[in-house]
Length: 53
Image 1 (cartoon, rainbow, N blue to C red):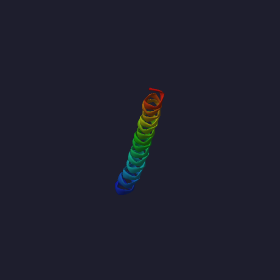
Image 2 (tube, rainbow, N blue to C red):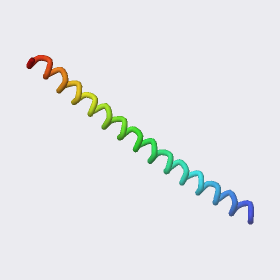
Image 3 (spheres, rainbow, N blue to C red):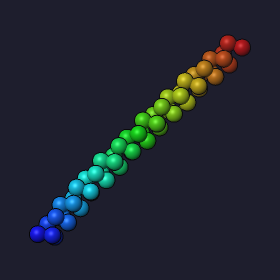
């Protein structure tokens, strides 16, 4: 009986770890997307200033 409880606990812990890992990687992708978007807009404004002057 103890082995089944240990196996169940390990499965639950593995699922929690997968969920946390996927959440952290999603946050990393969102952060990367925001940084790329900022780089895009900064590049647009820098290039438009060159054309205006």
